[in-house]
Length: 331
Ligand code: ADP
Ligand code: MG
Image 1 (cartoon, rainbow, N blue to C red):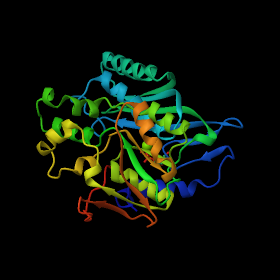
Image 2: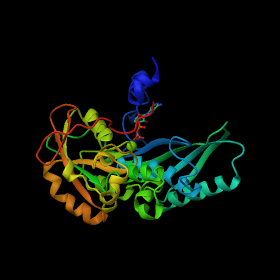
Image 3: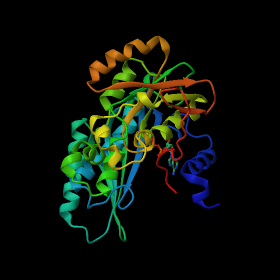
């Protein structure tokens, strides 16, 4: 069967099934934002990897090598944040066309190291190969957590409220506007969100420390697509309300320049790198404290339901709204 037909997640499912039982210390293998591996009686390690490919994830003409380096680290930090963990170190696998100037790689590493250092994370190794025509950067990041405080995608229950950090859709909107060659100075915060995302590590950590969430994921492929992963892993359904989606002032100002639908970039656009988490009813009053401590918006956008895998998007009159493309997938 062609991979195109199977789809990215169909493929991952098949790989997961063929993996079978493994080492007893692997608490969680394929299926979450990071693998969870027991390292002592109470502690575990978190392991995640992400690849950025020239022409697919980035265009050298749209960004700078320094920002690209920062983003490579940020997207991996985001997966550790989504487990509630603390990042420790990373390794880099670089495939580079031979004609690449050294200065590009130097700036790329300066970006990686600056972003990593800001989170107390060190560069611990890697691998270098020549590639034919495009650059491929793979980062593998190791984190740590207390085993009993790791937050998985599978813990959401009917009645839990669904929250997101920050604003949704800014990165997707920023990318669309760059592609439409809009004057960058007018749309700076949206472009920044796309080129230089800030992973929510402190927020994820706090959510884990305070045992607030029943499940969590980072929004990398788009709100609907990533909420679906929570629903699949938790065997639950969800409803979300359009008028509750946190849209930034810049989003409200510019969405019409890039999208036909007001909510499409927030629902389906990728690369927000915000956290989506679910909170049981008895803990929901504590979210206000979290929001104050984090200093960014934390918004309730909907609730988990008992209807397995049913994801409803509702307008102000509680009418269901259909959204076709639910986010970014490969193949
Ligand atoms: P994220 O968007 O959080 O980075 P992905 O959608 O990339 O997560 O991956 C979902 C799960 O599938 C993760 O547990 C990841 O480790 C696993 N996975 C993805 N691709 C592969 C692969 N080629 N082989 C084995 N596991 C994979
Ligand atoms: Mg993730």
